[in-house]
Length: 517
Image 1 (spheres, rainbow, N blue to C red):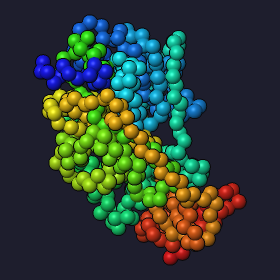
Image 2: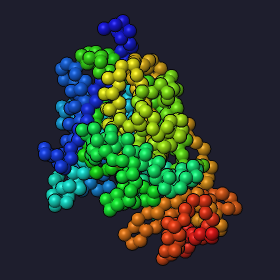
Image 3: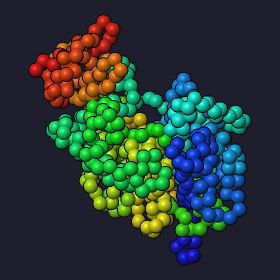
């Protein structure tokens, strides 16, 4: 051991272990594990990966878990029941008894945000060994329901729980929800089409861009044993509309969006350098967080430019600056890739090309590796740690996105030691952007289409536009008049972006539009 390593402050936080677990219903040894069982597997894998002496599980003093999708909104009703204390369900499976059990706020930023939070807590002496874990078994739920099976996954445990809540503020506004923008797919479709408008591209050209961005992701996913959909696909295949690859909201085909039908779990084990030494964890397992930036974005309707999330970009720039690094010094990246726009936004903001030779994903990305609910980035961090151990002294960036490009956390990692003697110099939050008051609930008069999507619906497809009023540039959401199929077919025949429209508010409070050119 060189003098350099022995001189590292004992309170310095390090990642000492990472683990992943996954199963597919088509696997020969498929066990249909519950979320808690899968999480237990990933947790055990992370403990084993650290390679220490004695009982590492017993030394865990905090366990923070990511919230499953099925318990991520008020009134959610998990079909097979759930644990009343998910973190403690996991600790029970690994023989740990931490003093703190935490259920993190909803959102894909959670895994990266927690790494920063608990690196700081360790540096400040508030914790010694912390396990972060998350899991999803959505694919198993669908598989068992289709077979008419209903296992009981409910568990009742005693012990305290810090439940951080749903954190749904800022994702949707009443006007968006009312006008059929109710989930991630149609909302991101609005952003994607807005970016196409900013670049002045045709629908066909932009579809080719999306396919070209994601085709290399499929090749990474095809090599990853934990992938939900391990199949390499060409750019053309990703965007060709077929029965199996239908449009889920213009401009997205099914293969371009996050795949939530997964059974996946991941865990990250953190400790202080002092605890790692005491547990006999070999120093070649240690990976340090060098900088973290957390950011919140304005609501979709308040963003000055719907084609970008400046706060997400600022999160990455802050993390890089806290690490004292530039984007050109990164050896590897994992950008959150629920939709093409989530990746394009970061590339645009950081000056990276879609075909950067370093690659943009370590897992294979959310549409192909799998979008394990709020927990995807725990897998990205696990992959980054393993990759960086093979490349001592090099640096990697993990970007984690939550909500509707609403929350972003970026981490910079390396096996090179990081100085955590002043935690605020390693972890920061981007100041919130000012609210300009752009959104109108009710709109009438002439306006222009800023962006749009066409959402497939059982009782007829719906075209939704986000427009700006001609007289005050305020922003509104609107749909075609009830029963007006002409506007829908016009939206298909001719690009809606930038077109002049007339909008009115009907007696139900819906904004209704028609084209005036």
